[in-house]
Image (cartoon, rainbow over all chains, first blue to last red; front, side, top):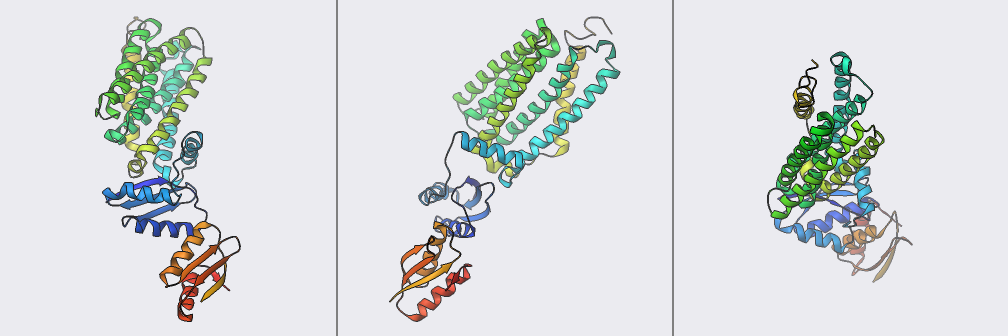
Length: 303
Length: 65
């Protein structure tokens, strides 16, 4: 027996759910676990071999919503934002990532004022926002990678590679400075992006690996270049543009995740402790680079 | 014999499908079901079957006049 979610349409009253139940019973003895009129989703359980048959019958009755494009995309975004049943796990993940961002931001702001007061300048504030944002985004993306494993297709791997590559390159480029950051940030972003992208695609086929690698490579290089421009040349405006683009990437990622592996996420709501531990691991890595890296105050003999 | 039942509470095509199915399960032949006019037209072999249809429709939460 398998249990999965489907997007549905034409559900307007209680009778619709009853008819749906009857239709499913006839189609391979499937049963309706729940119906969400708000989220326009249903969860069905049936024999593994009957999945396609069930979908075909629902399609015949015009219940199956297979629309794609902007409508379907906003349906997912609204679901995640409002925390509707079908999107509960994603809603929890997003909310916790926002809290994680807040905690890290406060921590870094205090650390900057207390520990690094000598070096506090106007150039530091974009980095102060950037690091918690990058860490939260990466933790969210890592969580998706962990949940999806071999269940997602190449394009999801590509999105993951792109998000992680972009943020890694961006953070490392900003921390390591204009010259070293350009090289180290790009390479690190590329490596992280390509391996995670490939991992997310399950190493199942050459296409998944290639797409993940290429996305990580491009995004890693681009992230590092943007960070260098932003921090060294005072192009802070790019920060907002990039944040907006990263949010769009995440929204696209959520869309793909729910299109391909929604049922998997339902039972895997991330716990607070695991999320915080993941965030701290990334933070330690980033702070380590900032303190001991090639452009750190220690390396330049300032401390 | 053909009977026309006025059914209150039908909203959509699903209601029509549901009422048609429960009527057929009772042994009636459904001629038409229309949610816009709130009408269910069935052909029944006896009054007993018609009674069963009425009960089944009511059991699904609709009012039969």
